[in-house]
Length: 323
Image (cartoon, rainbow, N blue to C red; front, side):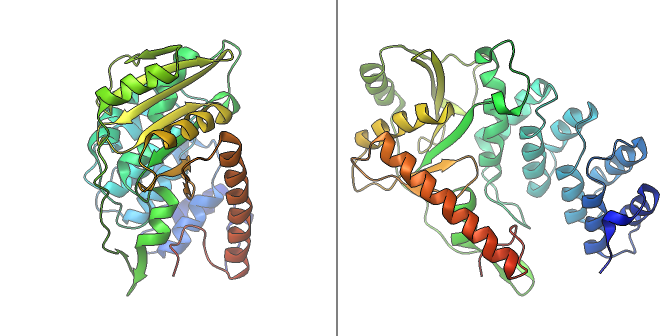
């Protein structure tokens, strides 16, 4: 097996652009180039990302591993309109991780994708619109950032409450490798519909210091959005236009409190799952307190560590669906 991390930039780049090399070797070289500031790498990645005749998985890995350079924002914004859901997925992901860059030029494209792009990538992952939510929320969080906040640790914790399998839960439940291709098992979407007018009434009744429809420019992604101040901390939220899922951004203890209250407002027999960013969901139980949600999240974190350890020991990739 080639030790890509021992190779020089020139050698790695030659492998990356070589269409006769195996997909595995090209992706290995891309991974080994992570962190390189060589402009030749950036230019090669740009050519690959926008070449529709290139291998799709190589194009996606190039986007995933693209450096935090200013051209990244324009690149990902353009790829959010690509015909491939895989490229739209990874463009949304990469924007969500570009903490050192101003991603505001991507706002309109992210809003469009988060609102309407409920498609699945061919190779790996969950629905594209869900992947775009985190980057979109980072942009709408900007008015609430303190002046001194400059890096990823100052961005809000992100959560999604949904009646359906999302993120890793969707992958583990419904995506399988069959005959060398990724297939999606049949699944039944939830018929839950939350009336935004009703939600506004009950949120205002419970949370006195709440403002509604504060996001500017007004997003198409949300049928209703809000801002709550609690103990000097900000919590922003939104009911997705699908009227099924609720997005929350802020300190994790704040959205746990909101999640416990929200669970109490929905019929006990209606399943609701809480997702902390793109992790496996935790099924919220009727009557749970914020403390009980915190305990469940902690147990989930422990399970994730054990799962990753088992996958590594088995020689499996964490990016692969469950067998």
